[in-house]
Image (cartoon, rainbow, N blue to C red; front, side, top):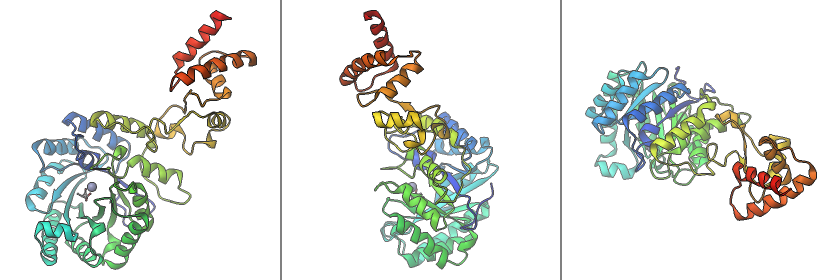
Length: 392
Ligand code: KIV
Ligand code: ZN
């Protein structure tokens, strides 16, 4: 993978952190084998960078990152490290087995974080210089993050970003750690850094958004429009608290609205449903029914007007084709809002071709059934047809 620098290209790097930030969701712990299975699929579907874990966190995390690094074929493999030599050395020991290793080191730079680390502004700048230089001596591909960047004073943010670039960082990630920013501000922050920080045009800016106010996808896309060229995200938006930017949302938004957001990713979108289901199963976090792109209802229609429109032209009520994300077909859900056209089409799929009079009769009985049941399944319709035949 060629690492893009800012704003000079339309290619957006997809950095997946399901196995690190996603796994930090309380209750989402995954086994070693499950992590390897997810990483293999991410690698296969075109994810540019996989953040495979936090190697110093535990022996298990270390082993998972090291094995993913050994097995990866195409993706850059990244390990997270706090701003100390021990974390950085441990991260490097794990990722060094990859054909393309990356160390990602970070420190909280906002006033709240400076307080708890008991470092003053100058002390923190010195620490950033020392730790990033140390990482760069081990590895050519270094990502640095000022945690809580969106609540860090702008002058100070420029200063720490400049320090990290001078010390050798090749990607600067701007985290909205607590999901506090809004799209206009997210864009302005990237623009400000590109304008003010010496050397900013030679590195890649990344955006890393959390979803506490439901704006993670919008904030990430706004940052890209301002010049960021790496989006950090997770499958199904898995992540701490309300989660992270969802990979499937940003990737499909860039694809569907390429007319107004002319950027491209390297993701094979037809693998999206497969990875979504895998992550939901192994994390134990089910996907909400109405979740954008991968929810059970994202390609389902129950109302008569929508079903009728879909049967005539699927573009009436769908902006993506199910096949684009690896689903075989739109789901016309049969329920009390369904109309005659959908019932006729569903019955035809089940092998029953009905004349108008017969359809009229079956439709009355179907509506009575739909009033009693939330959803009328294929088996219910077959029973209804068998019953009709017996009573005819
Ligand atoms: O949200 C955050 O700030 C993070 C950092 C470790 C990059 O996940
Ligand atoms: Zn995060």
